[in-house]
Image (cartoon, rainbow, N blue to C red; front, side, top):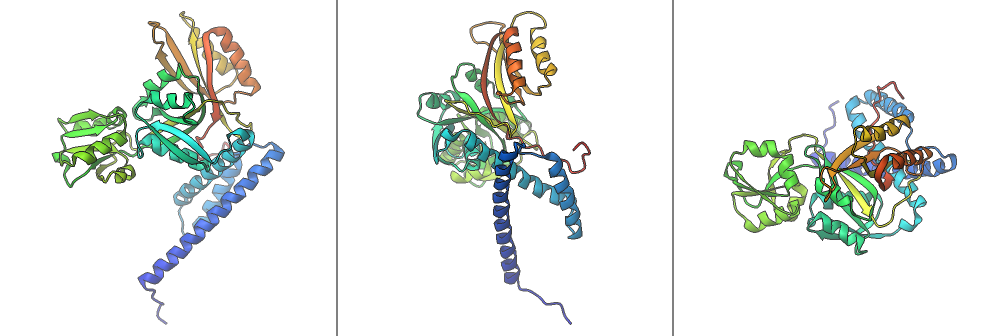
Length: 392
């Protein structure tokens, strides 16, 4: 008996059939996760059960081994599925908690034209909410805030920090003066490429266009290119438009490859960031704050100014430690117009409405010269569970 041979067309048809089945099952699984969220409302259980997630992963790894699938492959796939399930449940619960926010279409402002990193972050964030967008391009961070403040947009999306270049100081400074509230966050992978409009080589490039942040995030690679001119634009999208219009072999833009396609650009060199894993955290702002259900993890962001004496900041931080509140970010920025005075930005992993956070605010109000809550919002940083970690 000879083994039956399949044609390439037959193999591809079978692959497509299996892919379609996978999509169908993923949709079915997501719908079941919604039913899980509904049941947790009745029992007041939190969305995440990390012990349950670990048991699930270990069982799936064992099942995968019997099918000649290695543990890393199984873990990567199901980390993605679990993250989607958690965020899908969180979005559902938040809609129930904030019924006034239910709207099929949202007007969203962001830096740059379509294809900018802020635009990509906007689309990814609101796709999770199953909300259609009216996209409003802005040329400055100040404009992003202004159009929301004046009611011409419902939300604004702003980059706040990057794993390579650090905090985006201009945004922090603007947050000191805005009346808007932070209502959400999203962490976006940043994949920088050299993008060109014509066939060329890296050796021919002598001028690079981009926003200042990508220049900074790719500084090591740019240094290796030698003596090149770094031209700053208002956004990566603006840089791509510039290179597309110039159509010269000696110019390139730094930006995202898929966004470059919108402007007819092709990647000449990929993965040029200083860090292989390059992420930017974006915040979402609106005119009204949101309430975060106690069933999901929350973050609270506040700003405060301490007395100008030794130990003032330490006293404030001790309040958080004493109350066992985890601080994930501490950023200091000068107070414009008050030399040598600083404003401290603090992110903590706790719900604003919780008793422990209210106790912390009472203590911090007593210890500080000025304090203001910028927002409480769902934490969308779903840290993957290690299936072999015995702490769960």
